[in-house]
Length: 168
Image 1 (tube, rainbow, N blue to C red):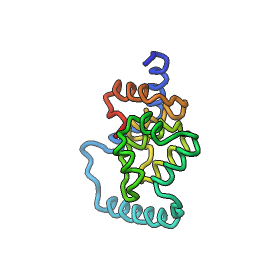
Image 2: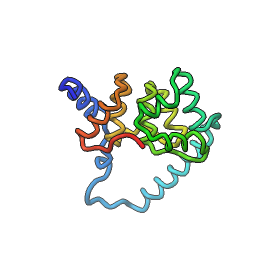
Image 3: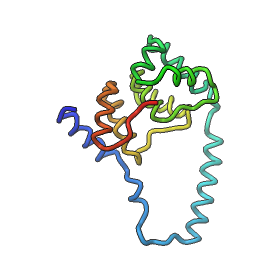
Image 4: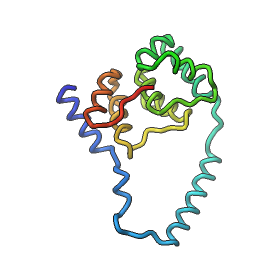
């Protein structure tokens, strides 16, 4: 990976990564009152989430196939570019109850050259999202945001930071 790209990626991580450990104070003990408030708030948030979510019109697999067609690509081109095994892609395509890993979906996002909104939509259909508290998600976000759709470069960046690589 070239130095300029690496510097930009490091700046992106510094700006966007939210370390989840920052939210926990070592040695503090949570109060029962705070736990009850948080539990009630969580229940309310879940209820609001249920009310505000529109029903999904397409399954993950149906939407993936639609995206492949819309991009003018073949299924073979996409699963090869995503470095995904043919059998795994077949399972994704034919088993409507199967949900691939987030890593597999992100490899497909890169292969399909999706923008950030399209990537988030595809992830959401499988029950995932890009999180600012996961450094690997911030790295992938950088590549999508900057329209760098070379899976090899993404993998090298993830390896550089000691993070798991994408794929099935």
